[in-house]
Image 1 (spheres, rainbow, N blue to C red):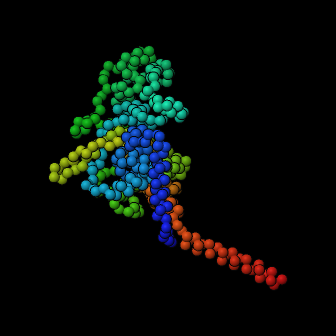
Image 2 (cartoon, rainbow, N blue to C red):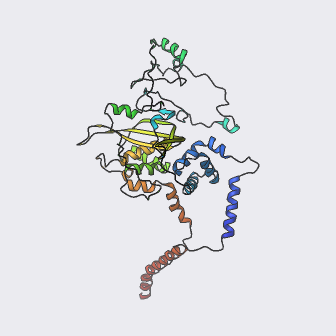
Length: 422
């Protein structure tokens, strides 16, 4: 039970003024701008957009600034603002096969059609503090050393570029193996150059280049379960309908996409430590931009609205088969706004764990309990429930306090009566 707190309006106003002063920081230091947050703290902006369910870099940067860098508070602000926006319609599902790739890696095939593109990643950094950043000297300002040749490094063996599965298609300007350097290294290794040019990547209906997925390549051989068929039924909208159980996979994926990264990371980690017994391969992670289109009934076709950056992860899990299905690989899926590979991978792990029932597997772990996972993955709801404990609970506590006093008095009464009898 809550009671009204009177007389605190002035204190609250002063607290707001102090919060604004703390947010501004030392006035002799230039105030940080939204363009700086969006450009230099881009991964924080991506997380706020993903878990706030609102793709707007400027608004996400504003939320981070207003929240003093508290990302969960910023996500709360983004969600609150989102509820005030009108809804014009639903866009066409984005086609990640036509993604303009900025980063693309696979842990299943070293060489795959389209090649692997490292892009911007922390994966191969040494996790050492870069003191140059403290003096505003970035890597871009540092003098560049020429990249070592494969012969100097000794672990990269160049092979002729091809596009079939298991071979490599070297992208122009990406890494080693380009131009004269590749020919010299190949000659030194005793390899004959391949005179045939690499086969072109497939083209879409509008002429866009399509980067084939690893799961598509496995599917061509029937080694992985097929993608779910689209029966035309619109998925339930978690932002307009309350979560209910049982939840189908589209609804689960919606909840996971805006779920807390840390919570999903812990659940995904648990699946690898024996709680659900899944240790998948990362079939592919790709990051880049995809086109968003809105269907217009009057025109009879979809109109492009713009591009958004997304990260997609498809995991490949072993499946021993069942009475109706042969042994094959199964899928886990993750898709989030911005560049957030850890979130997308965690989402794919949890998605696969939650599919235990449809695959005829035994339920043995918290990550397979959809009610537990989906009811607790939302950090805005979790924050509200935990932080409500700061609100006045005076009446409740007084009732508990009186109860404890009565219980102690009743416990001490027999001893007093015994002493009086003696």
